[in-house]
Structure formats: C-alpha cells, structure tokens
Length: 175
Image 1: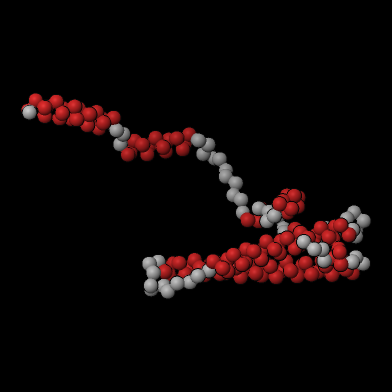
Image 2 (image 1 turned 45 degrees about the vertical axis):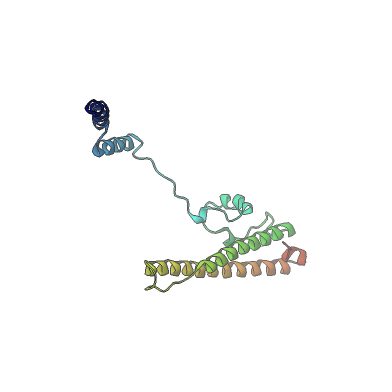
C-alpha cells in the first residue's frame, strides 16, 4: 500500500512542479503585450466614421460621395447646366427626398417604440436606465425636427417643380 502511494504521489508532485516552473508571471505577460503594442506603428491614425458619412440608402451613396464640403446635400438644389432642371431631375430629387423622409420616419418610430421608463426605486440601476431612455427620447425629438425640415424641403421642391410647369407625375411621383 505504501509503495502504491509513492508511485501515485511522486508523478503528481513532479507534474505540479513542472507546470509551476513553466508558467509565466502576469507581469511578464503584460510586459510582452506592451512591447508588442509599442512595436506596431505608434503614430498610426485611425479613421472615425460618423453617421453623417454613412448614406441612409443605397441610392444616396453615390450622391453623398460627391459632396466634398460636408454640408448636407439636401440643402443645395441640383441644377442642370442650362440653369433649369429637367423633369427627370425634379423627379429624381423628389424621390430621393421621399426616401430620406421614409428612412428618418422609420428611425423616429423605432426610437419612440423603444423608450420605456421604469420606476427608479423599483429596479437596480433604474435611475441610469431612465437617463438612457431620456437620451433616446431626446434623440427621437431631434430626428423629428430633422424630419420636419426634410418634409418642408420636399414640399418646396414639389412646389418649385409645379411652378416650372411640370405635372403631378413629376412633382408627386408614386413610390
């Protein structure tokens, strides 16, 4: 029996000592990671993409890449080389504005539907949760103002197309 204990305990002790001697300390691992990060390009710049640079629909991607000054393209009307827009230009502009309005309306609806306040004292972190819900509600209000502006610009574009002599097929195209 004693011989059995020696044959079982001796390999286990030997294995344990071997594992301990091979293990790195946490400080060594941290030092190695820091050195790896420093050997990478320390002056590498990262590009930050904002919501303003992301198109809202596939149709808007080609239009937004041409806009180099960073201003919203909806604020500057597109004019043809002769100074007046053709029926197709009016129709395309109005359809883009309608698509933008639909996208913003979808965002507003989604945000408004996701806002749910709780009783602050009833839940753990209820106050923080309500603060987050308030921020979502404020974002929905900001988007609603943007939506109202887009609707106004659509009405102005439709009225301009109508005054240019085009029919309802141009200034009120069906989606």
